Length: 616
Ligand code: AGP
Image 1 (tube, helix red, strand yellow):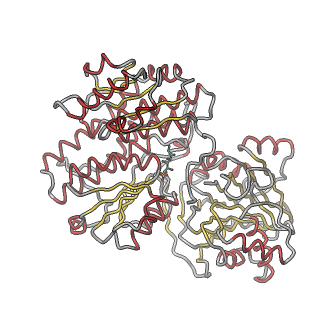
Image 2 (tube, rainbow, N blue to C red):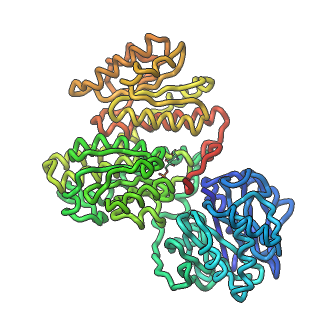
Image 3 (spheres, protein in one colour):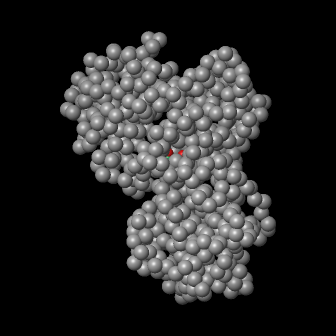
């Protein structure tokens, strides 16, 4: 939540910073602001609402030329999303400007202290206290902004990324991080700071991951990283594997449409290089040894939102293939219920952004109890992978739209790889069985492609139901989490009531919601092998229809058993039951995206949301 950019070099800072904010706007869009150093003074511009509002302001009230600047796009926590609370916040003497991501938990106490010292606080934010504290600290440390930042950070509690500039040190940008993300971009005669690499990827792919409780001081020629205590810190450098074009819309109207279309490639990339010559899995990056993997007697998956739904699907495969009991838990609930954990528990943390605070805190709790943590991540350069015992990257490429699409499919695939690897190492499956399942997985990119070719009728359906008050989704087995995911997509994009249910639960209450014309989307598994779940769900469709609801049935090609009871049918290519979520989710993504478009909503940046949820 909140996007942060800092630049120091030879270019016009404002151009770099605004371009960076455009790429980071998915992180929050309640307000945007910039500050630059010009001569011996600071200038700021800030505006409530999206970045476009700030750009209008910059057009009518331009900033002077400057080669040092910072910028912020906000997801409001403390204080309403208005102009005054927008970042940057500036010290009373106008010398120091600060931007912030996170929550400073002891801000009330610090605010009272500043007020008692006669400081006039003008905003309702927790951030503003930092600007005043830096201004107070600076003269005590000879005007050294980095040292002032270290000293101030030692007084702060909570999660924060802070970036500051000082008009008395015009070629310097100072950043600090605890729990919230901050990445350095190393350029030639210029350096960058940002919440994620997409902000500076157009200029450099060389990045440095900042560790916990570190301060970085950037000049055009130098990058100095220290701990909050001023000790030199070890840095971890990496090269970003994708380029600026991956973070562009590439001809699509929205990032979400592009990311939906990228799913075949994304799934192929998750599998790439992980299947060896003999058709078995080789997960070279798995830092857990075979002995440790054989010791595991319980798996707990922790995640939020869409990633949680991926975990729910994975549970079916994990238990089926490995016979290891698996629980799936919302990360935000996990550590507050005193879960039973030990060294034999493998905790799998799933996070696209690797910044989700709920997931980070849950995995820290698991590690404190001695459990091993395996992270399934997409983005490089943050705390979740660094604090895990093992990491499996999904390689989905940057996901910019707030609503998760390709991240979901690739998380399911990555979880399946973990399950199969466990089955392989522990001998739960014969080699030929593993090879056969991996072949099924390898067929999926092509099938997702086929699925995408046939979604036009889904768009028409979405437009037809644009005035529906509510949409229900039902499924059984892995179709149940697919139903949950379909409902989540519709809620976050179309802002309408949508709920997913296990189809068998309908009769235990939710069936009372059914009424004439209510659209109910039913995810039907493969009929092959006379599946019991298939038979049961066909009965559920009839129950729904008998009560006047309108049935939209997602069923396999050639499954005619559903035809008499379906008002509309969406076909998915034939595939094994456990693979079906990779297909059945696609029309639900398209449905939600199209409905949001028809309602005139911003598909990439739905209201109230942010892509990375970096506060609990
Ligand atoms: C879904 O469309 C949302 N963007 C959201 O539920 C998301 O999946 C959740 O916040 C978890 O994010 P993460 O994967 O980055 O941890």
